[in-house]
Image (tube, rainbow, N blue to C red; front, side):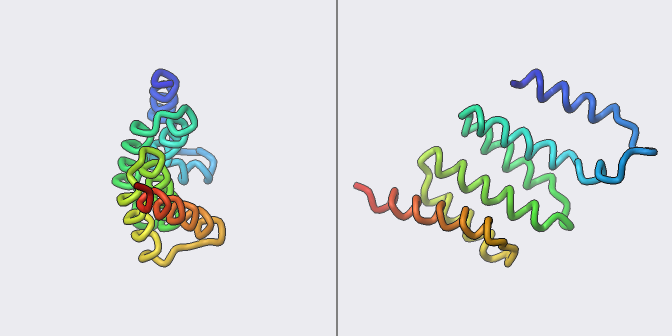
Length: 123
């Protein structure tokens, strides 16, 4: 998977923004990083996906508040997938504090919180 992601990054780097479709402005290095996080998650590489999601959050511009909320919830899901219920719950708390919540995002956060509570309550 690494070769394919690297190839996609090289193509992106060579793209000429002049005359490009307007939607391409959305496809920032942060968004590419987020897509790589999702690819690693799909492959079951949760540690690598978590690193990539954290990197995505570092790269995101302030104007992308919904994207930040989305990738923060993804980060919490990845932390939970690796058994770190405490960090996952704290990460979800960051999203709640941001005030950016859709019904889908709220449902994902509730699933993380419920699973974190179950895991932390387990012996």
